[in-house]
Image (cartoon, rainbow, N blue to C red; front, side, top):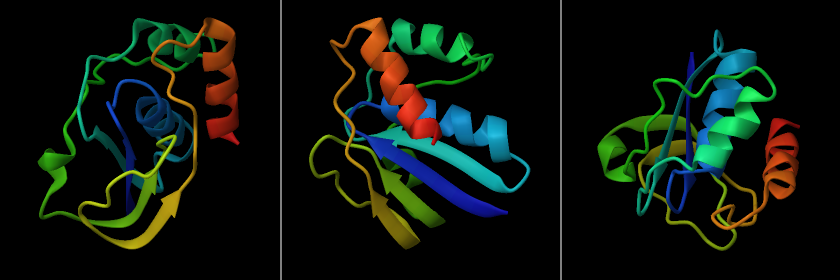
Length: 118
């Protein structure tokens, strides 16, 4: 299994959605994690938009990227609106810009979720 780490600023929205989506769709092929530079509690609206498509966020928690130091990943994908720090060792780094969902309305969160799922 390939190890994938999604990273965003707070691990409260974008990276949580990406982790849940990849686990739900391709979990038998990938070992998936997410973390944040400045972790904050998961946004309840993120939980809501994921449940709308049948994906439970139960058991998810916000994590610091420090938890992954010393671990090697096949792929690290950063989802910050601007530049995210590169942390643990990875075979491949990918950066995809997504707006910060912190103060976004439900419709914007749905658009972010749907774009990540593509």
